Image 1: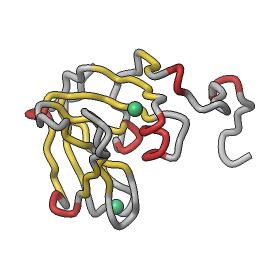
Image 2 (image 1 turned 180 degrees about the horizontal axis):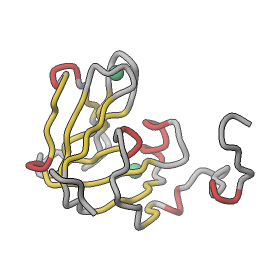
Image 3 (image 1 turned 90 degrees about the vertical axis):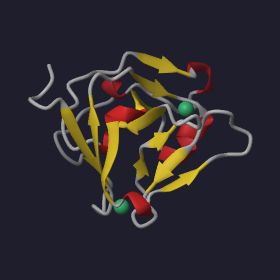
Length: 138
Ligand SMILES: [Zn+2]
Ligand SMILES: [Zn+2]
């Protein structure tokens, strides 16, 4: 299941920021909460959680921006100020890191287990598997 080092690399779209994360992952959940929809611009955020020692910034650590909504106890977001990509973020107690799975550069060989905040899902949410499929743009 793991690759040789058990290390997975991720990056933002412009390449200014890169990170490494190691298994084991604690979970992989699709979060449909309204905050995750805002920060991703998507129907849900594909969130992998790891313990903080399994994560490190390998490039551009000082570029990473963080936003903590005043009304949120746990939630934060990380992002690249140049290209706007969501980036991993440390939990407020700094014990965990949430990895937006779409920023990983290769297959984490680990699949999502759950939809959370399902009752908050976007009214237009439609399961991707139910839609017509095209190998490229269609
Ligand atoms: Zn970037
Ligand atoms: Zn969420």
